[in-house]
Structures are given as C-alpha cells and as structure tokens.
Image 1: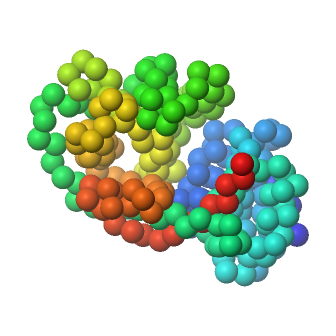
Image 2: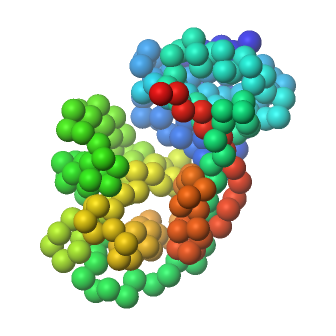
Length: 240
C-alpha cells in the first residue's frame, strides 16, 4: 500500500541516491503539508519513498517494489513522467547516473562561471538550449526561486567574455555531494567546448564536492569525456 507522508520523512534512505537526494531536497524546501508537492512511502519490504511534483513522480524502491502498483499509482496522480530506481515496464527508458571524477582543465581565459540569481538570463539560456517557450517561465521561476531562497539550489551561469553562454542548476542534499540538472549551452555557442568548461568550472565553484547527474545514452560519452563515470542506472517513463 502506498501512503502519503504528512510528517518527517522516514530515516535511513541512502543519501547518495539521486532520487532520494531530490526527495530530501524538496522536503527541505516545501515540507510535507502542501498538496502541490507530496511525498509517499510504501510497505516495509519495498523500501519505497516517492515525491510527486510538477506532474512528475520520483520513486526510490528496491527490487521488491510492486511495479504495477507504482504504475497504477502514477496514472491515478496523472503523472506525465515517472523516474524510478527499478524498471517498471517495457516503456521505461534507461538513464545513466554519472558521478564526477577528475575534470579537464579550462584552457580558454575568456570563459568564466559564477553563481547568479539573474533568473531571466538563466531562463534565456535554457530557452535556447532546450527550445522552451516564454509561457513556461512563470512555473520554472516559482519553483527555482523558492528552492534558491531555501538554500537547496543555486544557479550557475558561464560567460564567454561578457556574453551569457551556458547554465547549470545545483540541487544540494548534504555537505558532501550535490546533483546537477538543467545543463544547457546557448544554441549558437554549442560545439565549441563551452559545455565541458561549464562542468569543470562548476566543480571548482562547488569546492570539488562530488557531483551527480542523470543523462540519456546519447550524451553519456560527453560526460565521460568530461571526467564523469557511470555510477548506476535509473529508469524513466515519459507520457506525451
């Protein structure tokens, strides 16, 4: 049985797990009392912990997890995407959990990265890199700004000279590791080493703490070339 959590999250989940890290971070930012950001646990045997936010369901569980129950639960919530530790169905796409190692040095002195709270600049880069639309700004801003205010996220912008060129979002769970997402290079500046430089400079800004991220197969080689290694897999079901 899957039950909603209204108090503190259960202890003893692996903090270095990418999905658990996201769940813990969102709990720190929002707590368990809002209906737009909800947390769930399963039976003792499956060690399940889940977050539903923004139409996406994140599920941590072990091999004893009931795949069909999780899929049915996600459909009941109306989830447009489900990310999980285990493969829930044949629809599931394999994702790769990458962890940082030795990063290549940045050789271009025109490239500089820094933390920022210039949300519009960050979104303009995301809009170019991911083909987003202006109407998506308000929802992105509300969530991102809230996480930054609560100290669980920071935004990074890389400049090429004075031009904003690339961005990444950091999600903190503890003092030793963090999770990187929304990694984007402006479309007109891609294929010239800026993405590699962004990751290297991000590691320096984060005092070389362990960085984890999730990627698809088609960009896995890029992250390996940037000094990341494969630490495991996750699975995603995306629904139109």
